[in-house]
Every structure is written in structure tokens, then in C-alpha cells.
Length: 261
Image (spheres, one colour):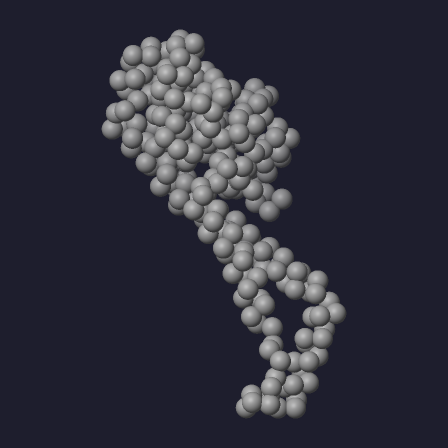
């Protein structure tokens, strides 16, 4: 699953799992009583058989909940696939998102990330290695700052760096830095990679940058993305950190059109 989740979405999903358990437990037949007008001998016997069976085989409840979770995941994957198809243009051809690799590549990796997310940092090496080793891959970077004001500040600076032609160098430097991304450190990193820090500061608070981040939030919501990192490869949404081997597998699946591999 995700390395870092939006707190509210994470809480809602946890509540959903608890609700599923409670629903299953509430569906268990209650003991019949003499005061129950429906407590016929036949019903009492059936309820006793079911209850005794579940007590002797509690793993059945676990298996039922696991199957419920599996079906939920399948439904989520299908919903995500449909959303990816609906929003393909925003994913692949958004002029506000930086594109690395082969602009005409046959497979695109879209990454939603936060510069303060440790799991995004963990995926950086694998993503860069994939770009280097596969000449037919392109990567679209979607700034998705969900970890506070410092994350938003770093994303603003990164988007503004596109105008100076230094985005990828700056992106990598921000990812490789610590999590203390205040204004001073963001501008210092900018200088270290050759950016004009004064121009960057002037550009990063523009309405255009604000709109790009807002659009990324809306797109993530439409796709059901609740944390970082999250990757879209082909018609597949992949939450959480990904290593180089898994990138290769997902790219191959996208090339062969295999949606269920």
C-alpha cells in the first residue's frame, strides 16, 4: 500500500475495515429466546448448528473477511482503471507537468509524490535507473504535496524551476535532501543546481503554479489516490514504493496490454 497516506483518507479506510468486521459479526444469528416470536424449533436448531460451527471454525469468519477485502480491492482496481481511461489526457499530456525520458516513449510512468515522503525518496533510484535502462519510457511528474506547508513550498519551487530548464536536477536534489524543506533550504538547493534563486522565488508563487498543484489534487482525488508515492503505468494504479524489478514488470504488462497479470 502507500508509503504515506492523506490522514483523513487513511482514517476512513481503517474505519471501513472495522465496519466490515462489525457487519459480519452482526450478521451472525443471535441466540433464540422464548420471548422471540420467531424462535421456532427449526430455526433454533439451524441457529445452533451455525453458531456451533463458527465457534469450532472461527477461521471461516477470517476467510469471509479476506474474501470481502479481495472483492473490494478488485472493485477498486476496476474503478481506478476506468478513472485512468477517463483522465488519460490529464495524466499524459498536461503541459504543467514535467516529462522526463523519451518524449515519444511507448510506456509512460506517472508519479504522484511529495518531497518529504520517505517512500518517494526510496523509489527515486529505481525510477531513475528505469529511465536510464529503458529508452522507450517517459515519466510524468505530478507534484502532490500532502505533508504540510513545507511540502507545498518545495512543490511550488520545483514547478517554477521548469521555466529555467533545471527541473530534473532540482527534483532529484530535493528528493535526496532531508525533510527540512523551508524557504532557506529550498532556495539553497536551487542555487546548488544552478537555478536563479531570485527568479525562482518570484515565479513559485504565481497563479499558474497554484493552479497546477490544485489540478493535481483534483486528479489524484478522481483516481482515488490517497497517499504517496502512487504510480500510474498503462491502465494500472500502483500505490506505494516500487523497486526497479517491479517497474520492469509493470512496464512489460503495459506493453503487452496485460491488465490482470
